[in-house]
Length: 488
Image 1: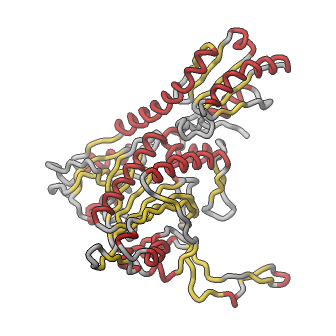
Image 2: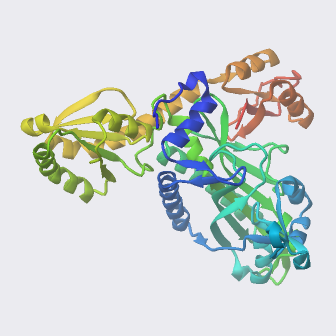
Image 3: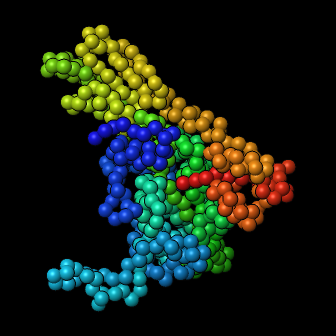
């Protein structure tokens, strides 16, 4: 199969799909809108999962698991929640199939459920039905539970990793005695998401709050991390929701206070998904394919031995023993490519897969006690002695991690513009990028701008400075400073 990619500038969407395919990350499932995550893609997800799982456990959270199926009546209890998800729900109506003779199998009409079941689009309702059983007293609070799971949202327009009918994620669901505790939890998780994105995925993000039109269905406030992709569109990379007492009211979850009063519980929920893999591709990828940050790369160093005979192969293999032993002792993830493919094919293949560092060794390098190194984040090669290489590789991986973040930050900042009027806003949106501007806070204004530009308010940044700003659309004093952009 050809490894040649279309250039990003010639068709970003086509480039993205081919990177996912040719780098061996995922494939289309047999059911429209579903995705098969291949081993290489799943290793990236496992690395992200391991990192974030450690983060939340260090902050007192624990993992649990809740059922895939939700009684339909549960969703109906929270009106805003069901309205937000009604169009995306997959519904189970029967429990059995039966033979239909020569025609194959049919749904057994006698197995119709008394109450239909929803395949979870998110788990607030099923979890709060359980919290009703578990919470009686202030001594039972807080509950800090996270779940690693799959969810189903019946999307009409799908794209691998970014938007599929079924995807993997973590969803945290916490219960608190006070409004202040719930708000602190919401913002603490937002900071963990920012740390995950910036310190591990090398993706700079803006933290902010969603408008009423864009918030999670059933939340009082939704906070988010927003990132700029390589085509200057925005991607919502994670959300943290302050649910207030909405679900406690819906499921009548109360606790007895220290002074024997009965109070409703306060709630949060929060999640990141396999969409983060799409974010990594769209943020760091180039015309050669993936560029993976070392901290989450399945393979951090790929070793390409170069030889033409069995004698040379043996010589190179013996030369590599010390290097491999040292790298493995440092916990560096390495892979040796001893396949019969040509060196050129191997170089292109591992560049496509985004491996941060390539190590090349041939007979001449053995003779000169040298190593050739190629970084994925920049062009060019390094020629180092064997001894220096062993010490240098951990430093180089750290440099690559930091450089990918710096490149992405410079790209985002150079494509973020202030807009003081509607013409300036339209120009930014047309050319691509983030437009920071004033907004009068009215939903009608937000809708009119969206209808004309196809851009949405990505967030109200937590560092907003609305003072002295005018609304970009109405010219009236701004209530908020916001970021408008087209988005995935």
